[in-house]
Amino acid sequence: MAFESLTDKLQSVFKNLRGKGRLTEEDVKTALKEVKMALLEADVNFKVVKQFVKSVEERAIGQDVMNGLNPGQMVIKIVNEEMTSLMGSETTEIAMQPGKSVTVIMMAGLQGAGKTTATAKIAGKLKQKGKKSLLVACDIYRPAAVEQLHVNGKKVDVEVFDMGTGHKPAEIAGEAVRYAEKNGHNVVILDTAGRLHVDEDMMAELQEIKRQVTVHQTLLVVDAMTGQDAVNVAKEFDEKVGIDGVVLSKMDGDTRGGAALSIKAVTGRPILFVSMGEKLSDLEQFYPDRMASRILGMGDVLSLIEKAQENIDIDEDKGREMAGRMQKGKFDFNDYLESMKQMRNMGGLTSILGMLPGLGIKAGDLESVIDEKQLKHMEAIVLSMTLEERSNPKLLSPHRKHRIARGAGVDIAEVNRFVKQFEQSQKLMKQMGGRGKRHGGMFGGLGGFGGKKGGFPF
Picture 1 (cartoon, rainbow, N blue to C red):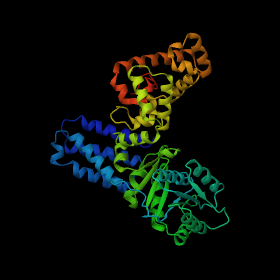
Picture 2 (picture 1 turned 180 degrees about the vertical axis):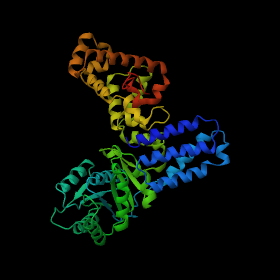
Picture 3 (picture 1 turned 30 degrees about the vertical axis):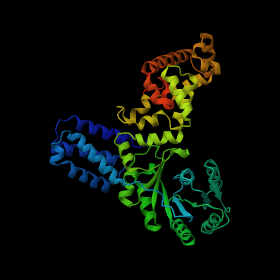
């Protein structure tokens, strides 16, 4: 998960601030020195860090803050606001042409940044908003680039236009726009060629495409894992071709977060999307305020709710039925499987917990608390049961449990422990009554499973 190290360091600084009844000017300056070091280690641009710390310090060292009822909390609030401002404050959408006009979006980026994947994901997102997109294969150099776009286009059910590799990209773009106008597409997304590094040929080709067709939005895809290199690439593209916004890819990787915090301040161009994984749903709209909250360890409940709405495939009647069973402590292993499926669609338990505020778990400790491998074992145990056994856990005799253990490839002790935890969760849900009703279909069926100590994180 992105920002883990930065989040943990900032949380440590804020914990010290909260522990003080009143703050002195020296307390604030000492805390901001640590914030400065944490940001530099996260590969945030040096000039950006310097200005950020100066802005926070000017606001924090004032009578209202120092003598307030909760000065530590006030300083954290200021850091949150300044960090949001640093990343652009306002959420930026792709600017669409009005009416029936075709909006042309040109995707650019270096090789390996995830441009082709991001291109298809954006088409999928626009489709959800009622847009009819046409993906255009303008990368005529990289082996299998055209085929990759076709594969990705199929995944999101969006048409792909290509003319093979025997035509110039600008010519392909021109023909694609004409095809789109004739066939009722209102968005054309050009997947252009990348290079291993920024060079004159790449820039000349992009400029030629812009001369051939009217490009309304130029979006640059940069690899968040490259830190300040991503910022430098964005600056160079903007100066030579002109970009309207940035898509940050691989934010789920081992990234320190410097690019997200620096790009807007250095280039003046907004981040439109961040990509947190391979699935279509892993491309998220970039909200500066939500990202600041995540970085500061305050969670991101709004994004979690949106993710749930997008990914949880459960109708209202089914949800009410499951909630009723949970309230009575009568949920079964089928409910457990349903909850596991929903949770996986949302990126897994670790991803979900990372968006929840106030758990008291450091970002870097989430994986040590949640054992995803153990969750897979539990799922294998349920899948080794017969349909009758899943619906009626009371049927699980010692003989049946031995058969299930062999089928799941686990020790019999693990099956016994899992079934016991399940029964305890049923009793707990029954005792809690109304709470089971509230949580309905989303995680209720998880019972007490997944924690490394056998406990339940919810």
